[in-house]
Amino acid sequence: MQRYYVKEDAWQGDTVILTDEDAHHIKRVMRQQIGDEIICNHPNGEAAHCSIIEINDNDVRVQVLEWLAADNELPVHVTIVQGLPKGSKLELILQKGTELGASSFQLFEADRSVAKWDEKKTANRFKRYNKIIKEASEQCHRNIMPELHDVRSLKQILSGSDTYDYVLFGYEETAKQQYNHSFSNILKKIHPGQSILFIIGPEGGFSKAEVELLETYDAQSVRLGKRILRTETASLYALASISYHFEELSD
Amino acid sequence: MQRYYVKEDAWQGDTVILTDEDAHHIKRVMRQQIGDEIICNHPNGEAAHCSIIEINDNDVRVQVLEWLAADNELPVHVTIVQGLPKGSKLELILQKGTELGASSFQLFEADRSVAKWDEKKTANRFKRYNKIIKEASEQCHRNIMPELHDVRSLKQILSGSDTYDYVLFGYEETAKQQYNHSFSNILKKIHPGQSILFIIGPEGGFSKAEVELLETYDAQSVRLGKRILRTETASLYALASISYHFEELSD
Image 1 (cartoon, rainbow over the protein chains, first blue to last red):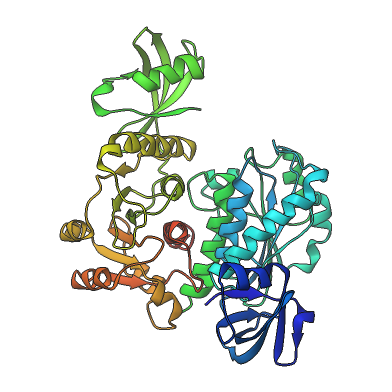
Image 2: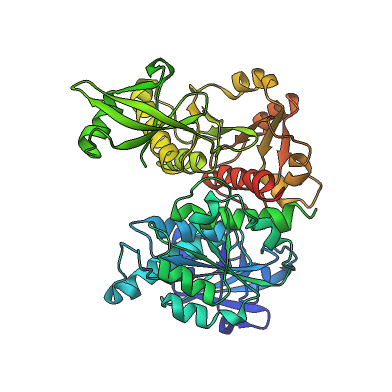
């Protein structure tokens, strides 16, 4: 059943009013009729099984039939902070990161980012990126749609990092060492409901200055297995391991 | 330092003779000179730090300086068996699967594979796929280059599966259940050195007949976290979790 992420003000008692792209999708793409059923997700993470009661020129109205119990969210909140990568890698990171349970995404222009962020293109790019996140959320039945935050500097991000329980970064140099930077030693300390800010460098990794800055803010470096991962694989490894640790290992 | 995977017959005592693409890469792409250093990997998984001693028209000869101790291989051998997916997803699976430590890859045309395998294009496709695997192996410092096996039917693959210690399959239906199909319960039984055949369906998942066939061969279904993953994400989740379980959790 098709799933839609519906803004708070569209929920009016037992009725949900879908507009714009969602209404277009229901009418033109799915060609649905009165009586057909969809799932609507509330921004609080709850989801309802709904039936279409009105199809108008500008909106589609549905009635809540029942609230669904399924919770498909990771037990910990993970924000992926990604140093701007080259080409279409960011799209892969957003799509796969959404499937694997990221709570939100934050981009930064790293010292070694080859790609530069073009302020003029921000609106269009964010529109495309949010579409990728939305479609991935629907496809894998996320309760919430991950948020894509505005691009900020690493320093700005770290300045606000005290709202997170843990600040981690994937550091290539750590992967080469046999020391005790094991990812699991950190995950074992984290409890469901806590939050992780997970910072990943671009293709060339973090600069010396960035590593020093990360350490100033007590960010902990972690090893993501023994092999050197590409920048776009690091967040996928981190999220899959967090899912495995909290969703599969504890069973 | 650039890494090359060199066939067994090219190793002659302390000298290694690189030919064809590798020789071209050293001479034309890297523009290396006598005295420059590279890493050569032997098919047995060992790697040597080497120095260039001769640059000829048809080959480049290097001398072993020292054998390297690094072992970047997963402690368990994982063969990813992938139902043929659409478009360029297979390339992503091979690249990321190599980075994440797969030992080998096996393709099969599944009942619900939209893409059909074109026998006439096999040679060209395998050439491209092997290039992707080779480049990913070099980039993430694999000791061995994963092997890409010929396309076979699921039945043929399962008939030969008794050489594997564990046969697992990622089953979407299992992801929806809260039962005890936890991936970790299976990984906890597996010891370093053992082998896993991990079977993944195409976009539409396994057909009923395929699930019955898998069960006939005692393949165990596993849940890969709570969210429904796309076909190209399933192998990445499985490999990242196996790496986490054996490389990070045991530390």
